[in-house]
Length: 431
Image 1 (cartoon, rainbow, N blue to C red):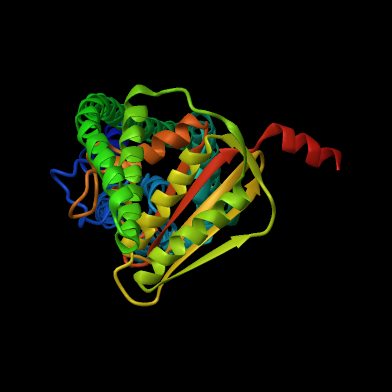
Image 2 (image 1 turned 30 degrees about the vertical axis):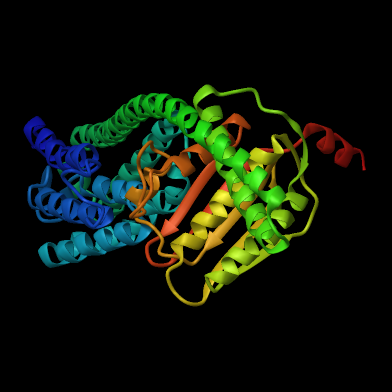
């Protein structure tokens, strides 16, 4: 008989490790970056699957075994990765074959029917809106439970007596519980994830307020002595010989750069109005490549640029340059080996200009990537994280986006997306 206790027990066994993983694994105080997220999820899912399989909801004559372990595997495909999902599916299938050979064969036949949609949706799952996730969770659960019933129906055709023995109301209750529980699991996961994101956003906002106040006060204090030093250097330059004048010019240029950085922090703190102009991104990147090549050459890094078409945006030229300089410099600093390589490119995607900076440096863990841009966070031994924070702020002020993709010990790709200039979109459309 299909008891409510068995259904609720299986739901509790499935949802408990999921809640634990979503709520506590994101706390770096409990789990450092060296702790692999997918490995932890795999261990938890394997543990849940074994318990669920060993305590099924319904068993009839060792021919029909109904439980919710396929929900765990679908969840692993969606919130883990394909390898994790496939490994978990093979693991449970082998366990089922050893426990019940006949039903193991059934599950082998069901594999493509149940898990095809989660496998295909995996790469796009995190980009879907919540409503679409709920819709797809209903579709996936419906397809899965329909596949189970299909196997039972086909078996009943071979032996008609089986269909009357396996009471149809039980199958109906199982189907409704299966669909409802998968929806609830997805809902709880999304709710916890959104709560964590909001909490981090509030914490980051508070840090940003502190940084803004510090940036304004410190910048004012530092700018005054710099102005005095700059004035004396200009006086000394007039009376210096030709050889010393070169050094004085270098000192002045560095003072100008320091003053410019201080101004940037002040603008970050005050959010001043930026001067907007039409910018040819292709030419800007060529200029960045020319300036930064000498820096990368000193570090033994090959710096390549790929620009095929002229693309335009409207923004603050100096700010966009600063963004590119900062990102290229960060890429160069992340390369700590020979045969270093940085690729700089731009392309067009929908109504955005896409700038990509890719390196083969040390890379980052996913947990580190998620924290990029937070106030006071940096993965450098000596750093404040303010540079990346300012970069992110500039891009946001230009209605753009920045995305990081990184693999530990392989490299990092940074993608900056800025809106195309409408005037050039219209002109190109007319042509």
